[in-house]
Image (cartoon, rainbow, N blue to C red; front, side):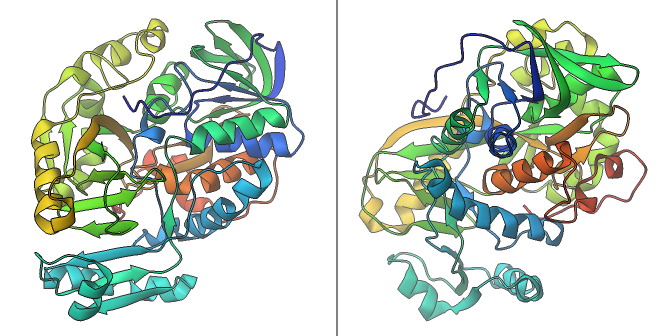
Length: 440
């Protein structure tokens, strides 16, 4: 696990009722709770482990518009605006900085792919510039790679995964929300086709609306209620160095990605290098995910691991309605893949002479919850009035988290939406619509 996560106390007493119950204490759930509380609603945030215990604290921390799928662009623009406002509104630093993002490559085809995104950038007013070889070399202080070019996304940046979701939760609590950790949500209370509350291991909370922001657990949470949400978890690896020399704030190449943290350390990873572990849920939704598997098969390996028997995609989760599946795994904490840790460090050390002796502080694994088209679901659930789903972020959840939370909060209170949410509807994944796989 990530030992740097900012830990919060829980509220002692579970409320009998709330206007909205939010299931899931990741960045999306915490953002939804904050924006609901900001509107004066009573909110209970329910988390089976601790806030930011799973993917929200294990991400790269990127907050970007660059190279987003066009369907996500309005949500990305909204999220960046919200990121700007969060620290002043809450009064605490979430680590958000508009440092800019630098991409560099030694592959002409990759450079052409980045250039092909320029029409989307122009449509949405993203300040991004192609770099020639000399400009890429100037922006990245290295001597061992010969870049053919790159990209500078000027206004994008980063946040602190260990801080962002917990501070959003603290902001929600300051506005009256309650936070309940080590309190698994077992299922929904339903009356005459409408959600009327949430059953938790500490008791029932009555509610007018429920937001399911349960990340990789969302499909399993909804399934006993007859709701189909095609979802698969992809195992990824990242690491954090000890504080070291500054070679750039946010850098990307095909064989490494690096984000400088507030303490001078780096989060390091490799884009697209992951393992799709065979699981009962993965087999169940294999048809829906086949286009994505085929498109990304070269980057994603297929294997068998512990997730077959434990966790949200496991046999016990798929075949049993026993709520102990949630209490049995407070936080999914897969081991890092050692071959990837070695590859990451070899690539970084081989690129930057100043990092030749950089040391690893810790490494971790994570399960990224994906949809078949790699675009999140932010949607009312048609089958149950009063239920809203915000999950399937497909590795984009940290940067988009404030926008997703804001949008689903608007849905829950029946406000006019800040962006068109038609691309994020749940029904697109189950009504036979053609799957168009989005960007990584």
